[in-house]
Image (cartoon, rainbow, N blue to C red; front, side, top):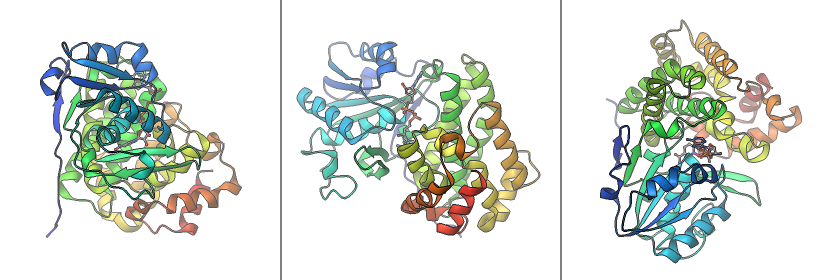
Length: 372
Ligand code: NAD
């Protein structure tokens, strides 16, 4: 009998115009909205803040992709100065991840470094409400207890898992993704596919997540190219947002695997966007997944319409090429001599051992060389 735990405590609101009644979901009247420069300048953050009539709303809009610990500390300072009772993250994974930790730091002293990656402090129970509103269809951060932060001094990007990072409310409105440019539609959409397949083949996989993951993969394969080619295609955007949500819930229980472990140095050291850094190794990880998940992966390939694991891998690579995504590491600037280092950094993330294949310096280096 399969044994597992499943916990997803966030309320999910998924509909067009999902944020229209956001005022019902906030706590108190002092609200900090965390977003990035694009979403502030194009009016998205202000439009949502404008619905909070009678509240004192402040904006912190400097979040950069792959947010740094320094950005977290600056946003936490803004939250403390306001005395924020609700923190809202509007954006991709970067803004939502910062909102998660800022909602904890609002009433906890010190810097992110005190709590993250070697820090010795733990958060007291979170008193600030946390609302996440995704504007990319990819990370699923709105339904996970994970935040990912980058130490700019050491160039180390690492996830932080904390049960206080589950948002109280996640509001998903596909319309917020219509402005995504094609390359970000592609990379974030393939990130969602990676989440789904990594939950599915995970050595800690479980039946509820398998269902969510398979449905998410079907939705991505059926809709990503339409969303890429036709940015305002309502059906494609809606289905991609749903795929991202389902994949997020799936991996929130299982964690991710080798694809994400290896993506961290590709982003921190080569500047690849998160989705690109994940997707570039996806076909290679699919090829080796039969080592310890042959039957399950063959069944997946057939469910998705392919004869074999190899055929699925080839189809994913062709899909990526059709969206002008890199499929070789040299396209990101990686050189042969860097491969042992990338393998080592990837192996330092514990999630890599959830991959359904032997993961050591030799096997990871061989995988990376196969796509150099
Ligand atoms: P992002 O938040 O870094 O944003 C990337 C770019 O997209 C930015 O320039 C932003 O302005 C732009 N953008 C966002 N929404 C837009 C829109 N609607 N229209 C036009 N442009 C828009 O991108 P992301 O891929 O969503 O997030 C990546 C981050 O999330 C990484 O740090 C990654 O490690 C993290 N992540 C976290 C989790 C989690 O569970 N917490 C899961 C996966 C990834």
